[in-house]
Image 1 (cartoon, rainbow, N blue to C red):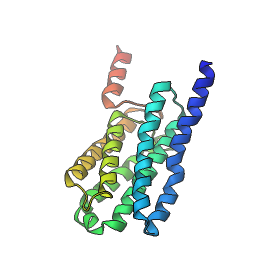
Image 2: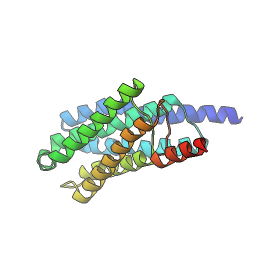
Image 3: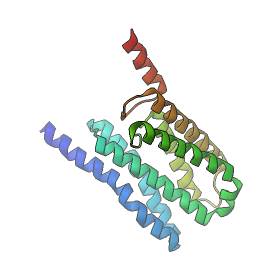
Length: 198
């Protein structure tokens, strides 16, 4: 019975995660056809599914390499769609904050490039800082499309947390010789290394 429940949970959780991947191109269509009201609600649903699948995965103790990869792809696509929507609907804000966006892009490209050089694929660390960054990004992006102007405090908070998260991932790629998933963060990696050396 437990095995059947676990299997069902695996399908449900990955299905919820897959929704974000499938929804991304439809969200883009909504942006470029000017269906902004529908877009903002479906974007909110996409970010909400990120919370749901994470909660369900912890509750039913369901983890898999496929699930973590889908989750990372879904997260990146959802944030990318949200940023594209900002470019389309709030270009003045993008111009005002262009240096921060450029810095975030450079850090992201550096992290991705380093991961491909070291592991031949993208990372799926799913650190605690990454989860915090995803929450801050989602909060900022959702509220940006439900208010007249983006909230600067939320934007700067999300930007700083995301920068720290990308820097942490670069350091983790350096620290971990082999590709790993579900790594809590630098502290836990160093703690594990210290215990192994004792």
